[in-house]
Length: 214
Length: 408
Image (cartoon, rainbow over all chains, first blue to last red; front, side):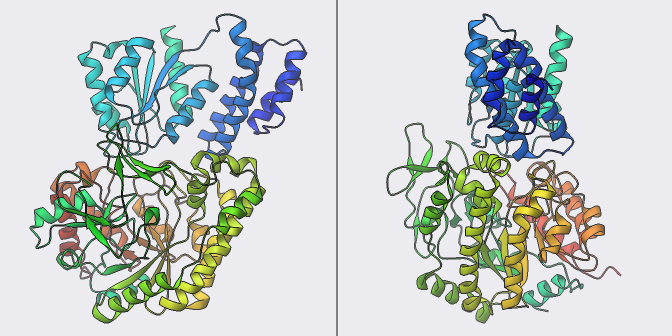
């Protein structure tokens, strides 16, 4: 097993203590940061996502693997920045909707997107519709992802979509919704484009769409 | 047949005269204060004011008049203290929401911050909980062990926890005695005793979940100390009010919408042994008490082990989660556990359904869960703000009309 493969395994198995060392070793061996990112971290998080969807992994393992990924990414980031423009897979704006402080789901989605080499703009929690609109105007993401845990706040998702329409931005972005009370049916009803059951599936769908649109 | 007899009969998996009903017997079978205020106005009750006794979830205390109207069979035995260390024996009027009349514990003093959010501060001025502007709940945003690294940090935290004192015990005895001597309700001792959620509350959700994977020995130490603390309290509790209560309520949310939050293996290794010891201790002290576990989400994968741990009753039976289909649950586990909940869907039907849909939903669930007993009717979790009062009334009316055991 070469060093990058070892790194991949330690991320998958959340051996966070080994991760920085293996990352440095891979760099010393002459692998560049982009290669380590693509072959090590992104591939590792794909496996982690699959394990999560198959219920081989649960939230503790998923979160621990994501933290292990960051332990390497933190070392790679400055190098990637130095090496010039890094090709990101896509850009996504994320937020938990207004009135809702429950951001665990959104945070997991953020990790999975970052693990798949997307650029993530995280608006945080309790985000009013105007903030989503502003972010779409300013950042030109391909996707916005909205999360809600409450039946009382998921209604806000519709509000965001309406506001985007009012501002002529609805067709500029694919809208992704999720969270405990949100169903595929509800997503359709409010005119969202993408519904996913879990973070891993959401990222998989987004990757597929990016490929199609080239 | 009295309410208490009815509940106990169902808990023994026999059919009483009608399906027993719970409304606010514990903190996951109640109603949001604002929804309750609306309900009281809708029913035109004599007293339309609402006491908010659970400050986090903002639950209104269901009172006697409402219990009578809806044929409720259970009453909660609450402790003296609620969230943020507030006492439930002194109340003051407070404009928690713009419509309706609300009372909160006298020592509950939330403030509005510059953005219009309600915030709760501790004695040092630190914000420990927040209700976002236009929101309906207070969420904790301070975790005492968020920076904990060592077993010593955990020990320090436990040293600050005090077991039930005389004042709290007297409060419990006084209320338990009152209910037993003046009412026929089944009494649910609201004990708590959660492990998994206590971890989330102490360390923060994400940190605790990561620790479960990264540092098992630290987690084991925490859970061990917690069990010691709970067993000490349980001893005091059962010695003082064990003869008054019919049910003791524990709670821990192990499920999520799609499946358990942790693997079965992790549940077995880390959490089940503690839950089992609470159940065993209860039965050893008083074999007549039924053990109750609240656990949200999809937990059918854990149910055989929950039953094996000695749990008699499961709540809230979140049938909208994955693998929680009512027929499947009743067929698979109906003989070995009582379903306390699952009576009406709270994620879709109650808030957004028509009257006819509510009736149909409740009838179908009664038809599935009620045969052979082992069922206490209550909605899946608390009734939230936004649920039309008419749907709440329809739900309870449907139980009245359809819940009689005269179908054979």
